[in-house]
Amino acid sequence: MMRIGELAQASAVSRDTLRFYEQRGLIAAQRSANGYRDYPADMVQLVLYIKTAQRLGFTLGEIGNSVAALWQSPDPDTAVTQLLQDKLKLIETRMEQLGALRSELQQRLGQRCPLNP
Image (cartoon, rainbow, N blue to C red; front, side):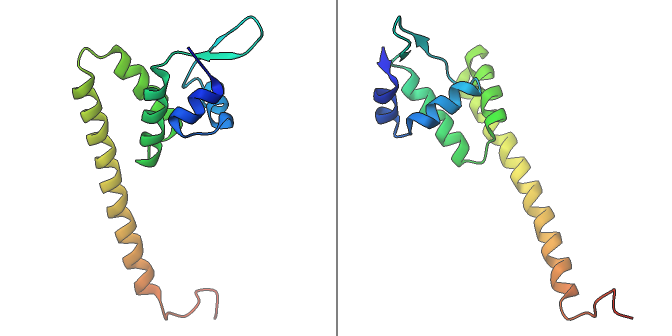
């Protein structure tokens, strides 16, 4: 078991971040008799997964859902590949939308103000 400071150091996140993850239900700690949080050693991998997923653009809600799905999956490698493919499709769709928005903004540059008579 690890205390919160040990987990924070091992996973390179702050204690406040770990408390926040716990409040959001992403990680769980057992409480010792004196109230200290105790985490299993494999919690480091979960915290690193959360940080990586955040960096890749997943929301904490999506991460929470993905963790539950990965724990329940008979083939977590295939499940994580599917999660990444789904996120990539969303990003590609959003990039297309942003490209169209950019084009429209460029077309409107130099036009008169529509509120100006």
